[in-house]
Image (cartoon, rainbow, N blue to C red; front, side):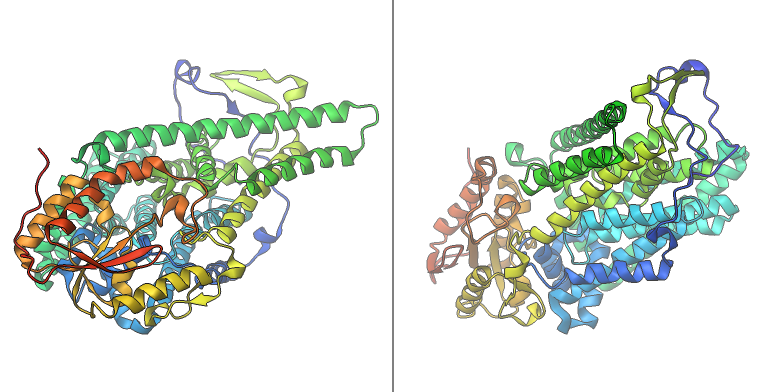
Length: 637
């Protein structure tokens, strides 16, 4: 429940009149005690941990999980071989240390590390919010986020580590401001630095420091106090950054890190085939966030329509309570049917989560929300807006890791509304028409229905669509013949194809040798302990021009030609059900890959590569013995 506060925003009336309607009568509602509200937090955390563990035994992904696993495996052995990954350097240190300490756990162990990171994030978020939110609403919000992301990557990686460090930053910044302890604010700055080296675009988290002035304004702190606090925050960032760079220098990683930044500067300059151009990122940002708000408005309109339908049913002369329940059950069943038919997928659900956060954060800027809630809501919304910005897929991938703080606050806001009987525009209140007045029972029924449908969608996609291994879990009980895949299972068809590849390639490559695995199969490197030829285990991240430059530079530098392991079919996205054919041929995706593929084909032709093995999904090629590794790849005019 939202606490009362005297720290209201005092905007002029003329400003408020331009804003959307605000809801009144929110502060007297106390939800009835429920299981989540009564549950001991330690029991809750244990159940959260167990739930995640259940799902780490299944699913074999060659792309993203392999990208991280290879980084962790090579960061201390051959760090220059994963130069591209050094823009996520600290995530490599964390994953590499875990892999070094527990090498026998393989992929399953890296997934266990991911579970530990996510559980830690949940615990930190809970302890930060428990004084300000209803405990049942808080646990429900955290569970919904967990259900939502649990069909995503399981391995520890820069996204879940960034979520953890962002939460630590906000927790120390908030408590430091509240308790007026500059030491904690300094620690917040330290975690921003760690977050930045976990993923370079996270430097935007420095913007959380603006919260110092927001807090100071409403607490009427003098400017000197605010300046000292801002200096402590910035000082923490500078000190940790200097320490990290010094540590990099000491272990021989600094030059590689600098080269990764230079490479990052080249990203997005490849024209139409680029995934990271500035205009592409801006367009993705505008499209996804506007779509999120629109979708949330649609959901709100559907909820209003349901409320009107309930009102009409109650006015019938033959009205019985079961009729209202029947309407609600029919709506739930209808939406669940739509989900089962694939009309509402996980990408649409992210619109709802993000849109709900954006809308409720705006409403929380007005009374009766407290300064503490406003600060935390704005901090969470800031992360939601900035963290996904540099991603080519925006909300659809990394955006899911931006919800830990903001979504539970949004859920608590919605569940704390007692009734909806009037609206306020500026300083004036208006009584709603009777058919638009929602009493406590109506609102409770609508909220419950939305939560049930949302949780059903999340659990359905978690069960049926493991990340890039979109198969029936009941059929995923076959192992890959590799020491790093103990305890992880997939379908018989996928296991057979991969075992064929591993068996055949063992005749041509040995651990420690350089291999060009093209283009989205970096897990091959991890399994075979081979070294990425291009200093990047996933060449798909390169647009064609950059791939050409990297091949030319590498050939000249290394004076060797690698064995090439090439995928012949798409294995990501809507083709996540491979080796079966995807339901729909993605012509746009293939067209975008044609320039990159032509660069590889030219490389293979110039160096007289020969195909020595092939199955339906992969092939192996070796260079001619007399081919010179100093040959250049011709540039297009």
